[in-house]
Length: 297
View 1: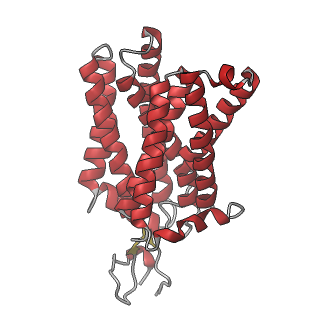
View 2: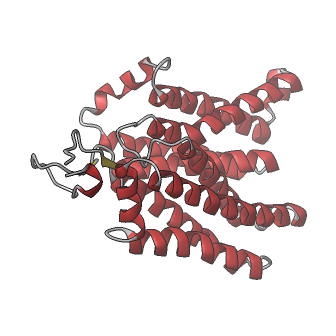
View 3: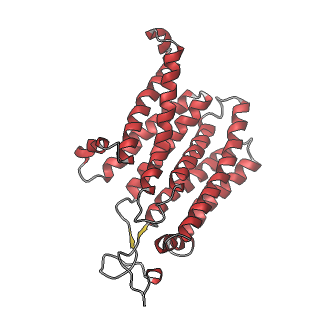
């Protein structure tokens, strides 16, 4: 018997593939809101849209923190996650969130209340605060993908495309929310730029997902099993319908055909975010451990 033909098994001692359940829906929620808030902040920062920056910080700091804590068995020990930045992407991500929320909040307060003039520091200090906030936000947008790609026991995750998928999904979600929140506040040229950027990013997401699936399918048997779960069996209707249909194809058609319509943009944003959330949940659910041994004739 080869591992290629091994079944998916539960907690028995049979040879086969076992679903990982260490990270499930609460962690998917935390990943989703962390990347969503950081992406909204980053895109709003590029456009100078202050309400979007503030909303991004609030989304990540409140919702990501809540779902992380709800996942932990002993929340009072959560601070220990910051102790290993030399070897853990979780530690690096937590540090990045602290740096980003601090410097991001300072940048927002500076723009709203003119801290440069009130406190007497010049534009160089203000620019440095902005740069640090932007760099830390980029780390928050990608570190979860890096953490997943280190999981060599789960072939679907063990890919350099995982942090890329985190980045492009975060940027796309941030772009869509900035369009929705800033429709009446941004300049017409900025809105047109955001629509074109969103269309391009949706295409990039499609390419990244296809590449991720291709690499997993042609990698180990465990990766092939995960791809079959997503495309042919247990999760196919959700992956093809929600991630691809609702999350990519529908928003692209709406933005292309009705870019000047605010209702079309709202529906496109809802569809994209729904597909993004479905991806975050399904990539956890479809992750399987390789069998610990194989028997070949």
